[in-house]
Image 1 (tube, rainbow, N blue to C red):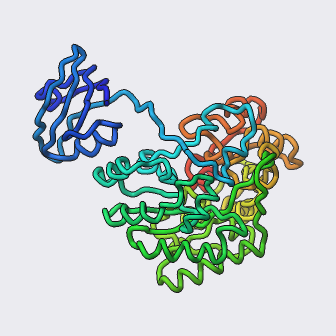
Image 2: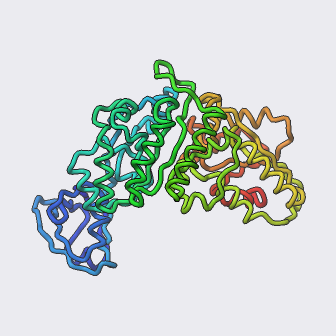
Image 3: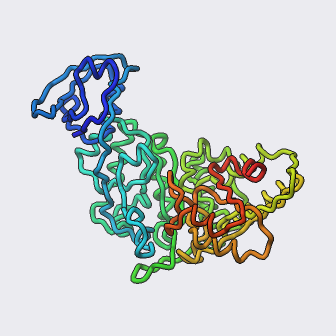
Length: 426
């Protein structure tokens, strides 16, 4: 049920909807969460079952314009659908103990997939929930497929119910639900011929299945008692890119999209921005570098700072070369700017973790304090911080970092496309 915490406007008044009322059902379907309201509030005609605080249930026939809203707000959803798998590559299982509790939540919630683009496996759904996704037309969804080989998927996810992914995706496709897929690659298991098989099975559902992100397994130093997984190297990264290229050539569309890390590891040039279409999987590390460079190129322009500024740009080890090249180009265009990449080794998760988004406050502080260069400003990418909160993964607050690095100006680059402006204006 949905408990109303705010009811404002003419329609709420017309139907006598008030704070404290609880919506039990829409058109006879149980009200599960706010997605039910979002869907039905966009319709012109539906029925509400409402429980008043005094225990009386009312049936209301709502008739309104499709562009009109009941303007209701609800008590936040408390139920998060969690993961029932025990994936051999699970990143949460590789987290250091004693961090904040939210970092250990294994969410596998299709509502978060629809609303936020989180990846889900669909292994915790029963037929009724799949029917609900279709009825509410929750599109697009982001699905962790990993492999279309049912037996292997059960092994990778360590869940005996994981093998029905093909049937689930076929139902979603038949209902017109758009799906973005990903395969986390475990070398020797779901790469090579198996990846080719997976891509072909998924492309058979194109264009409902829009794309397949191919991403490497994230490996930290906290893998005691976990199954051994080989890290990618230059050759294996190149093989993934080559396979994706061959498949895309066969499909005649850029369906298979390798993660940026494969290009960095192999030393291959990045794909141009147009390869990634609308960058629908950019949060998955797909095309992020290409777009970052493209945005930088568009914003780069001659300028002059009033006084000299030496800016250390915090970056993960893998992106350091790219960041350094952009800094050099910015220095050449902006008089009195002296920017340089400051690669930060990830001692918190282990040096095998080289992406910028998993850097911690403690590691950043260490690298800045040990830097041999004179620094007056430090530019920190916002993706190192918790969303909507200025705290790093190791619970070091941004304010603590500022205090520790006293005397240095701290610049947070909130949006990747503003990188040049952050260098220029601070």
